[in-house]
Amino acid sequence: MSGSFDIRDIQLPDDILWWPPTALSVLSLLLVVSLIVFILWLFFRYRKKRVLHFATRRLNKLHKRYQNDFDASGFAREVSVLLKRIYMTVDKTKLVAGLSGKKWLAVLDDGFEDQPFTTGIGQILESAPYQKKADFNVQLLYSLCQRRIESLQVT
Image (cartoon, rainbow, N blue to C red):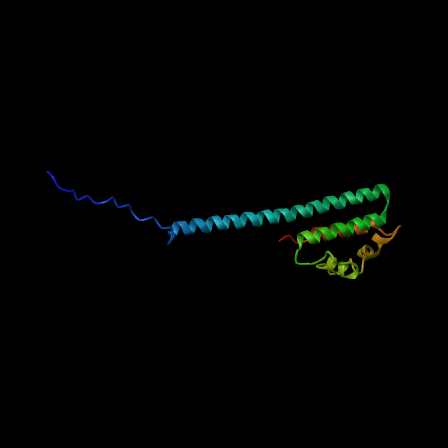
């Protein structure tokens, strides 16, 4: 038996392409992306709510400090800083970092019909932080700031 053998090479199958995707892979991808978006939304919502809880605790600490040292202008200064920090964290659409005076008070009045910051006790935030010795009803300002923090919407 002499002769050449007619043997063909082994043929490998073509690579499996990832495109076009199957319906199951598309649904799986959509599910994973949706889950990631939902988790991120929950995380940022929780973070904003946590900021409001922190703000309430911080306001209570400031009020207790005032009850110990009776520094009304220091209380007003710290409350103004606290409110600005809250707004910069919770509501990024409002540019409040550079606001002061009547413009800042107008932002604080958003959502209140009685405008307690521009026409009520909240006016004190415009001048008291810069006075050495301020004289105003701290309890009213404290209550107003509690009302402001509680009324902020977390989205």
